[in-house]
Image (tube, rainbow, N blue to C red; front, side, top):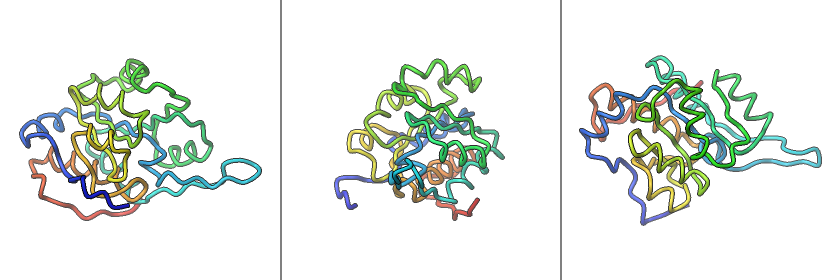
Length: 191
């Protein structure tokens, strides 16, 4: 999906982005539309399949190695998401209808302060938490996010949901923490 009005990259001054990235201890992520492409296959028995990017899984591992934990925050209750999260060693906060209202519980559960959080989301139900986390932490969206979300975040990814957007955000945070610049790009692996 081509959206010519969008410019991928950071919307924070480099020094401010680096300062915030240095303090990140937990990256919270939506699932559908970020870790997946937003497609779900449904049979008469219910939800059957979702497609996840293996590069995003490596992003989780790279963050963990750098001392940054990852958790999924989603309104869905899905055995498929639970299974993927189990494989990657992620906490899951599911059934969350109002993510911004849930932020105090997420802060408590992660043991982080608000300035130590990052969030990536793609749709209108992510706007509230993006606004709250974005006051002190870092926020991002896949390139194919809903337009209001794409406009609200600190970093608009080049990749779409389920196509490595999470990994790109993870790499951006890690690159900033290491003193790299916006223009530096790393090559991804798979998990």
